[in-house]
Image (cartoon, rainbow, N blue to C red; front, side):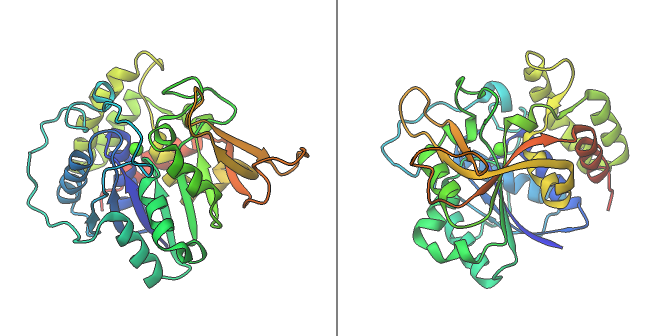
Length: 317
Ligand SMILES: [Ca+2]
């Protein structure tokens, strides 16, 4: 079993990833931490509580602080054209959800939970890296206590999606992402190099909704707005960014990775760009030296990952 804390900004593809984690038999979801990105932290937290209640998820929800790691960064608007005004595809999520929050801020929840389960916790982060960076700043010891860090973010050998250089999760808090990538813990980065090849068609989603009961039907409803947005990028369906990171945890054999230190560009026109120095390549001294070697996904068995996601979402347990 993988003990997982899911750091998330729900978010339509976040919702799918959450249902995947909830339903996969090898995952023990022990916490959900909210971060801003697809919407404000108030909205993403409300959405996490809404999904926890709708899907009867036992794990507590802890709310993030809602500010970038570097407080001086200007606020950029929320991507309501992709995830809807309510962050969940405009399904009219209620304003208030009658489910208590964990009293701790998200980064404190991460620190406490990792320390209480040394060597056992996998952090899956599919929003901005803010909570993970705050946890590292306040408790550097957790780097040696975490089992694995798997993040959805970045674009290495392909263009970004929010600028030609940068992917949105990283671009939303580059200083946080650089802190996470360069910390002495094992990170695997699932970026646009592989997620953009992983497109769930409308027909697949219909099949999941038919097999997976009411929770899967809610997921299908949430996804329709996002699918309409994706008509400009893919022939049919939706890119399942965040679920790819969750699939990696249970089926790493479906991915190919490349090892090497990773830095994030902070500032300038390439703000938020992720760049890896592959271990196999020799360079003169550079800011990539002396840092932990992290894994960047460069290949994916997209068909296998989509089947894994569809079969898991359809598990009506
Ligand atoms: Ca996300």
